[in-house]
Image (tube, rainbow, N blue to C red; front, side):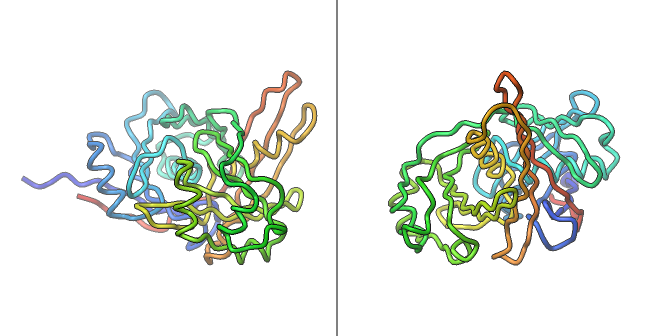
Length: 288
């Protein structure tokens, strides 16, 4: 008896052209897959994330599972944006209506604006103190303490990050985490993701480092980190308002990415965070 195979597509996300942005694999018809099978496939493909789409639960409403090579994530940004683009491109979803992706973190509402898919985070931002102090961050990254702006914080819209602000794009490009200092200062926090950024007002430049199976890796575009950063920056704004940022990431990896972030705060203080981006399909295959 022939073994069942599953179709998948490859996309580059947070970019409008192939071979830039963040690569993603999406299995659009993953019903029937066991958890262990999804994890094994994600490990085999060895991308930062792989998405498995289940049977729609209602019109324009799809359950999704997001796996790294070693674990399942409750939420991730480029898988959300990429999956939305794919479902519309494959005629499985209507771009004129809100698209709901049911992730572990909760429902992620996606709306399309021209070539962009914007998702709204399922959770508001949570901000707290980081276990990494300014001097430790400098040592970790191989930069001077004066090049780290303020004390790092931890922020999350479903996946937490140490946010570390640097003084210039040159410092950002030079920063390189030390594996030994990571084990000493980052791993004990159980938040093994850091998002470095330079703030030039509406323009932000960023890099994200994390661990995968004990190895340090860099990510070319990280929507979940972008949402945490936008939410954190908005906490320093006064009153109701609408703020937008363009985040450039992945430049140092040769995979330039554009992430659009926006935050609205109403008169009651409620905050809505949206992350938007493009995506292109670059390949297709089957997995047994």
